[in-house]
Picture: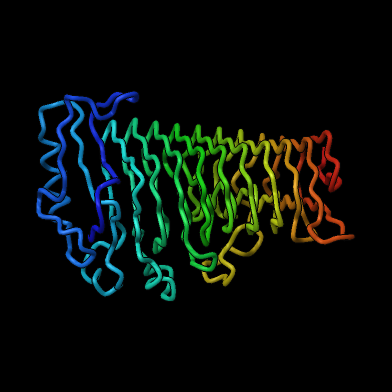
Length: 374
């Protein structure tokens, strides 16, 4: 781990006051006092680890680890030989963690993007089995894959983030949430090569709001059920999101071999600018090469129900603005389309909606005409 520049990015953990995180009782542990060089060349991992261990052993309230303005990973994939490539910066089992500041986490992921995706590490930041924690103000750039992972965690606030990677960088999701509950993503800018926010299996009470997304693949619930597992996803709410030049807007994607359910999902107060698939359910998601045998018609599927699309306006860059591609075996039910007005971004052209086994109601759908079945 390399660290460059002067302090600004701070890792604050333990009990803290939301109004005054740097109380007089706090003890400060700077990684520079534990041997970090912060020169962009030296591996400062041991200094970071020592500072963290010292803070964990502190008897005072609000121990604080202070790190340099930029944390930088090794730029060459060869450095990771023989190491666990699935983790770089990981916090496991922490309650009351606060990660804040105006600093940058630079993963130097470009060296991985030309390699097979299965060889890519998750090189940025992961919270695993954490509770009552906040990440605020951090700038993430160029992860090898997902920039920020929330896994098996509860009561997590992510706000004021800025996450960027090139549009053509593979699998560089901004934020991925899985097996977690009560997560709020708020007031952030995400521009990457994959989903701005992706929501995986065993999740509930997830709220995404006031996010600017693009480029990228939109905000996705899924993919779900890839390994034929039983999915439990509910109470997912996405609102006040601006999509610009994205591959998708509001998307739900499930594998044909999946089981279980995804329900009580809403996309509201959404604006679109030249989005390829503004409203998209793909219940027939599969390996396009067919090597896993998942592309043929299946009798199984994740049950999608109680999904609301409300107040969605803007432009589509493709002919099909609403595509509800539901399973012929397991229908989508309880779909609501309300106050929808999507036009083509090309002068004089029209857009349409396309449905397969999608059932529900609509009101105030100006354009395109709804294709829902009752």
